[in-house]
Length: 502
Image (cartoon, rainbow, N blue to C red; front, side, top):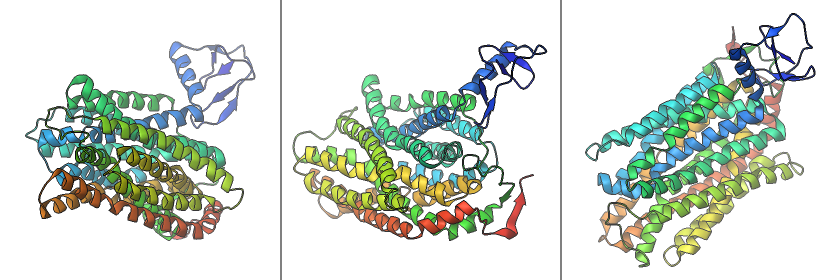
């Protein structure tokens, strides 16, 4: 049998059973005692919840929440042409949706990073999910006269999603270590391409089924509320540093100013953050514009007509979404396996694998704009290979952070890395690409061919940014071992600003 903290007896447990605590640790069950009394129904329910709070279950729930986070983000991209026609806005105007979303996301990230290092993380996560779910649902009822309000709603959704992306990886980091942590983070970050791809598919499918694109924004909120409830019930709040066996040594915590100074001196962290910004730039621009670019390519090839209907064809969005799901799965899994094998050859495997995959990705992404005018199938093949190589580094980048940053600083590090990667990456890339496309269209006579070419020329900026990101990963490899050793020794590097946890 198992024993609750108030001395009641839980049925269905043997004397050798273990009870999982809120921190995820295991405590041996106690032998039967005649003084114990049967548990009340509420106590049995609580005990059942405790038994379900395993690290693996927590990682699964957090990964599910991450899928929904990105699904909601890219549902709008799945019906982008419909939104553009409904609100009658230009390329730069429609690109503003993603820019406003990312700007609010990145501004909120450091705030949630600060809170995540000091307060109950799962409560913050749940509140964030409930918030963006409600705002997304309400935004589906905004009429065509209030496009500015629709843009504002995307900004509010970005604040809600920021709390999740900043804090949830740190819980996984405190539940697992070494190769187990790499694998669990790989599963967690697999949710980025999987959720993004499902967002396109969900948006297009819901629009077709309901005959109205607004319904694309009314499915993910219900799933989001479910995920928030699961987090509250089944995800533990592990002690910071417990998986790294630092829990007993972490008696103090540095101030936020001290944390920022230490992170700024951490060269591996700085260079990997800049590399992440390059990835964000490319994925943000691609996620927003590639389906529309391919739709224009088919008009040029005369295999499709320009949309003049209330409900536009979303085949390209669905195909691109499916490709994103598959390439995300392949990329993250190949990245995890490759890194694990390469660690047997070199301790700098993590940043080196990222660098090689980035440089390879740039080649195939360049080819997209070469072959798209003649062959849509050829463009999809290049997208498939390019995205697979690009997605290799997502989980590995998070693992690099866990290696070179001490546990009590990780939420701040994740949040600030998110801030910088979005600031220099996808906060501006969708709008910038749209702006360049609009400028090129105004310079020449507008035609279906030139609308296609102008967007392609604007998107050609992405491969050059990806190459730059590969260079940053190579720079990370130079300093990775030194920074990892410093983190393992838990050298605060700012002794004058230690403050008590109490």
